[in-house]
Amino acid sequence: TDDQSFGYGGTGKKSHKKQFDDYGEAFGLQDTIGCFLDLDSGEITFSRNGNPGKKFPTAFKIPPKLLNSSFFPAVVLKNAEIKFNLGAEKFKFDPGAGFIAVCDADDAFSISSSKHGSSAPAVSHRRQAQSNNSPRCIIIEPSRELAQQTHDQMEKFQKYLDVPKIRSCLIVGGIAAKEQLKELSSGVEIVTGTPGRLTEFIQNGNLDLSQVRFFVLDEADGLLSQGHGDLIRSVHKSIPKVTPEGHRLQMIVCSATLHNFDVKKLADQLMHFPQWVDLKGQDSVPETVHHVVCMIDPRTDKRWINMRQHIETDGIHYNDEIRPGTQAAETLSEAVKILKGDYVVRAIREHNMDQSLIFCRTKLDCDNMEKYLNQQSRTRDEFSCVCLHSDRRPDERKQNLELFKTRKVKFLICTDVAARGIDVHGMPYVINVTLPDDKSNYLHRIGRVGRAERMGLAISLVSAVQEKVWYHQCPNRGKNCYNTKLKDHGGCSIWYNEPSLLAEIEDHLGVTIQQIETDMKVQTDEFDGKVVYGQKKRGAGSGYQGHAGVLAGAVQELAELEKCVQTSYWNLKSKKILTC
Image (cartoon, rainbow, N blue to C red; front, top):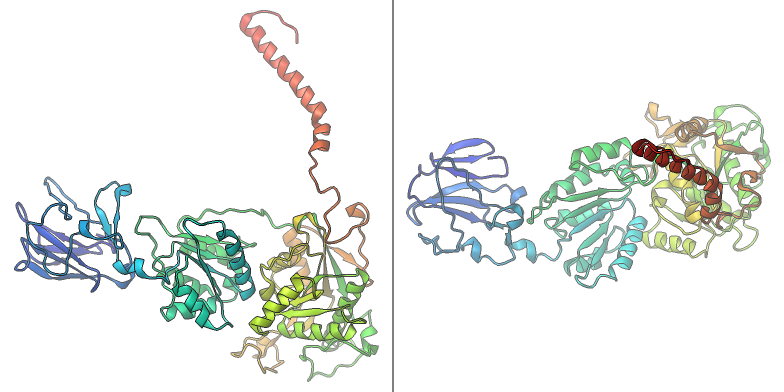
């Protein structure tokens, strides 16, 4: 027997996990052996020729992880015969109070196993069917916004399913748990949630995983990069791997960067012979996305020195001596921060942007950019903008995203984590204030434009010099932290090398990204004339007619060759001479 099997043999031995121990008595011809499965106390006991009298002590305590599993009767014989009685006939010996025959069990904890090649039923725990907070599917998302987006799609889909009716529930943090608990306890099939609130509900016993049949990780690389690997493994460990019907747990892992090393490692650990479905192929930029780079060099662009109004910087150089006109690394770093704010404004005005995602590296950078755009706006709505990051209240984040989607504000300033997976229809522009330190996030960002055959422009501002930035590894993750020492010296800062990051991105994509001048003008010759970003690409419809015309001559020639081949074959076979 293996670690999920429990046996009692004719030699008077019990067996579990390939180990044999003395138990009960030896048995043989004409003996009647009883097997007692107590799912309330989690015990297995055997008897020989009746109860009471020959019922032996408890043979096995069922491990907690198996209590929600199904138990199938089995027998191993050699040169012998045995008769099973699961209750179809009257028992020769009364099993005693509290026990009923498997055949008399109701559907709550007895299932037919005919599909497994046997007419014997399997037994599973009675309480499984009585729990309303036991969904069939768990979907884990890395952010509230993405969880809400997925939940909304589930609701759109489920309204077409009446028999049986599918019910879904959203479980995210930052919102009172009372309503979520009420909805969950009323009975749901699909739960979509974020790691924090899901962990809370599972640990408190509010979310029962015993009935889960589908386990879905959306944006799996994002979940792992946020440090949720242990949570994923814990949830997976708590879910039954085989259903009472004998079906294996189906685990689904989704990501735009599916071939990420950590995702592959997780799949190898948790999934059973996973099938990889690659809908994207090798990383590349769609033809509908025009992505360009603008280099920022404070050694040649010295306008920052005399700017009356400039963006508030992140404060990492507050204790440094900034001397305009010098080539000191700290001075050039501060200059880059100031110039980037100005270049964002310049890009918006040059392209008359009416909607754009603006990606900043940190939450503080997002807040500072929001203040700066509001200061620079010449009219009430020229630079109307909102922020999306985890320091904003959940209700504010939801409202800000809705304002942006409905075009009541023009610009959404966000971090990679907050904006991951969010889809906004017809997005025309993306501005990367700073390149991401992970090349896969570059594709995540610029991939927000150019969807549904609509043209999109992504502009990345890249510093030609190294920039000193915050890199918090302190316990409070940057809150009230002013340690500007480098990470290698016990501080919370690093020198950020964007030219190196740009080289990694270009090497990964196998392209050289077009560079534009500081006036932000973009050549569009390769797009056959004037381009209107956010609108469908010219000639993006079906090219079948033109393509068929080009191939018509070749197809006709191929038909003639085929005719000659067949004629030649017939000549050889019939020894006749025919011309083709």
